[in-house]
Length: 123
Length: 153
Image: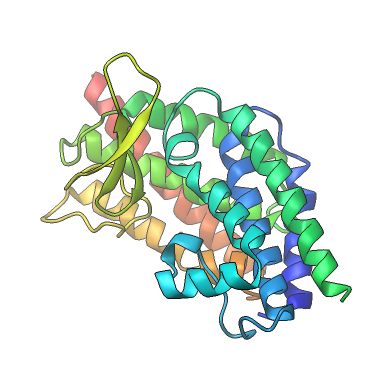
């Protein structure tokens, strides 16, 4: 999908995230993961690393070679996305305490990813 | 996760679904629906004794996070052949399942059909998509409620 559509989708998800309460930590994390993935894909398209027809679904589904390639272009984008994804087993699919704090951290990572993606667009 | 944990998540996700607009908030509404439905399937599978209800949380098919010790809050990834599914079909459940759970899974497949096209792609979100998801979800949770209530009788 092209960068404009990724950005539109990410902003739409971020608007919906504002309707979540702190205790909705599962979907706060999932929504952050979805929005972040859109920003990351758009940024890598803008950087010329991936084509519009080649979106990342999850960082952990990439081959090691692909992951290294994305990291070489911008390590923060793929690394921060991976950090968001890594909390899902315990706090989305599991019932480990502390989900609200973890969702707050995920939201902060989304802010950082969005800032990188927007800076890439402005180049 | 155990049945009570799944049911608690379903209740909280349903509360959130009511605060989201199925059209303008489709992505989160859909994800709440899919996550609640998957929890319902997992609860039903535990109830039927097909998968274990335990503190083991999937990260990918065959890999689960389990407590690293009896008292610790740390978790570690281990290989397990059976447990919660991430999505219906991931991993597949081997062997026959009771008819009601089979219907729940078919309902979830209808929902999952829209996952990537509508949340990651740009497939048009229309009334038909929303009503299909809503109807399938309703079937899925009704089946779970029936199964759990019959057990109590």
